[in-house]
Length: 373
Ligand code: UDP
Image (cartoon, rainbow, N blue to C red; front, side, top):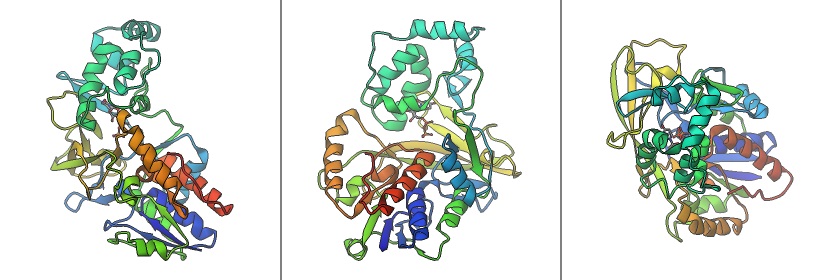
């Protein structure tokens, strides 16, 4: 079959590869001048540092199959994400762990004591937290919420945490020990040569052609037997029902010598600091040495039409519009919506790959795959 894949990010690359291996001819187009979507990496020309051009991407998974898959196409080196946050004039360890709690409250509590303290602060009248704020108040109480989550989240999402789904906060653990690994997964690492090299290896198949700087046109879709769409869900339908909200990021680059902040990611919890975090990219490749260093100050804002979207917002009150688009998608045979933008979900890289593999498994059984939305 002739397959058109719109978007050369992880979804498009993995689906294209699997279909190519099954004997289909795959054309992958991307409107941008590079592959790998928002996990694109490239070396900074001045310093040689490997840059996460669209912000930090750390590969982590519990899925053995996905881990094996990415290791087929890249050499992964060990990397553990140990994020810090600057809040209320101090530096704290994230995710919230025993050190954070003891630093914040000026205590020397042991695990059970810390758990009891946090439980005493938690709002147990909230039995079924729906919003981000409810989830935070229910699980960490008002002080830690104010210091670490409220301001950061307002900056990141541009709205009140009362309007955001609880699922966003569920990404972050609270630990009553000194484990400050941001992720809980068994497998964690960084592709030695960057994500773009990994995606290039996935795409390296004689039945795959890639056209960059190539926006989708309906004629291209009509010429294909099946389309996999990893662009914005509402974009496929020309936003005809209105726009789903996406956040985009602006990066303010600066360079210096040596080590600017001593870690890869420093968050800024205070509302009055306009950026959410500073990323110092060379710390993502601790096996490399560079004299210079490149940092990004990261600012989040609403994505305007035509701008690169990063995060689907999924406001609680946006659900109805989303459902209408999902109905449209379900009623569009021959087009499968995939990935973070295509299904309008806050997916991590490993889940994206797992879903891509499953999508192809369904397709190869001669049915039209219908993603989870
Ligand atoms: N978050 C926060 N304070 C932090 C870090 C995260 O309030 O210091 C919240 C914020 O709403 C963020 C969400 O938790 O969007 C998920 O954080 P994560 O680090 O997973 O975000 P990502 O790296 O995907 O942008």
